Image 1 (tube, rainbow over the protein chains, first blue to last red):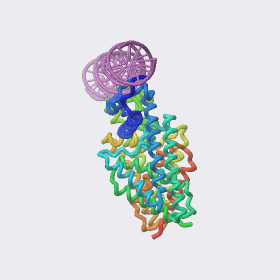
Image 2: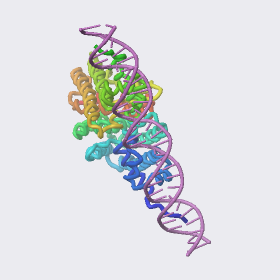
Image 3: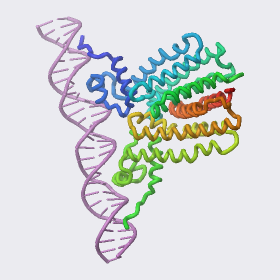
Image 4: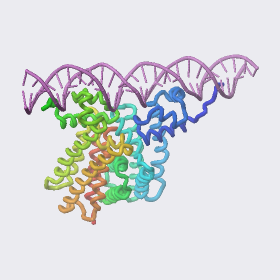
Length: 197
Length: 197
DNA sequence: CCTCAATTTGAACGCTCGCTCTCAAACCGG
DNA sequence: CCGGTTTGAGAGCGAGCGTTCAAATTGAGG
């Protein structure tokens, strides 16, 4: 029995995430947020607390999206390594096709706010573990199907792929030449498949 | 025939680089700089221009230090792959031994300021090319000495190692567990050495 | 149709930011 | 010992920051 909201909370969080992703945390002012989201300061602060809390919500939203897509895509069936390659290449395309490569929200956030901001550090760590765990599940499936050697240290290989992905996101912001990036990814996967027991 | 300076310009740049590295660009205020460097605002602005210009000087200083150390260390003689491993592990140790892992100035800067800041983007791109070129020289030496297959795409492998290094610097800020990082590096190098022609 | 809780609204707060300006102090050639 | 020039010192600038608050607006319940 009160006035209903004129905005959808999830939608606002999603748009805030996009803004933080493109511009970074410090660079995105509350004024930017209110004008881009069509939400006035008072509303924003009553709904989300403050800018920092909204950012944490945006990170959680990112994690949720990732958890829904990432591991399932890798495990859809059939050969896994080409699927891992497709995911990595997809990230490159996503970053390059923008007029300005915006990289990865996680890599950007880590560079800007870690390790000083403890809450954000915990959130980023959680998201990275989603990625790493996804890769690990994919690699286990690949080992079962004989795509890679069972002698491989799979958790270590998953960590390596996670590093490759995040490193990719750093490089792409400085020099978005897709070919070099793709060939580097191919070399990494070719190497992984070359390990014999 | 004028009053001499009481500070060393290179020393100030070096300390400013440390501060930017630890805290990030936006988070480091001019007040932080003046108090930590013992240089007053007026002096700082007359000597370096502004905060942004000082940051560019710090990046150039970082590049100079890297160019002096990186490739030469890789090419000192003997097997190269263990040397590449030592360099990567050295980066991990450097990041972890601090009370707070501060990662890599380049990865942090890329996350925070790229691609919006064009001058910084150019500088970061240059530094990354120093790293990548160093790896490439190392890999060429490794190929000559039979440590890796001549069938490997060496530029692609150098790009892959650069990504691995930068990705490492992202991960270490979120979860500075050295063992997982080291095993990931080992897996990457083992894989590279496993490629046959 | 009135009531009342929750929302929208936008002005305004205190604060810190990057930066500038003025002025005295320090040095060196003559 | 003095003139000229650059330095050190630090108070202070406007602008923008994140944030708050009181008033106007809205709409469902009794």
